[in-house]
Length: 181
Ligand SMILES: [Fe+2]
Image 1 (cartoon, helix red, strand yellow):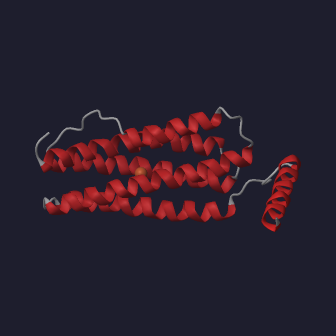
Image 2 (cartoon, protein in one colour; image 1 turned 90 degrees about the vertical axis):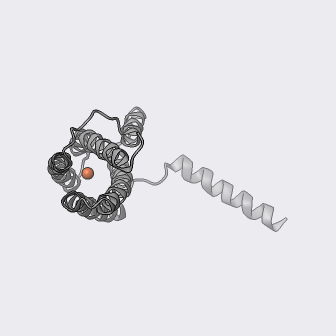
């Protein structure tokens, strides 16, 4: 790889793989979330993501380039985190909390990628490509907002078990005593 153009095409391949991985991840989130409104939101963004992939395919056509297999390691990492979390046997409410947090991470990642891709496309005067990427960026920003609103209302059912509460009260007492001494 030597040129800005090659670098840009590499970035397009990377985000294409990210979107493909996210179609599956969003389907999984829709299936294992317990709240109906959250399921709907994931399902809706999954459909949107399929449209984003089509826009990326159009970008390759405009550039006269063929998409290549590339792995987006960033999103792969988020998918791996989800797997590791699922092995902790979490309660349903915590799965919802986790899924919202994971979606916020994924959207933030995608927003960074699209912002730099839009900027590169503009610098290289690929105005149609910049416009298509800008549409994807807009959808990711709207999804991030929606997920941030979920994070205000999707909370663990219980913050602490009774033993944890006792322990934390005992610790607070100890700290007060230390301060007084
Ligand atoms: Fe996306």
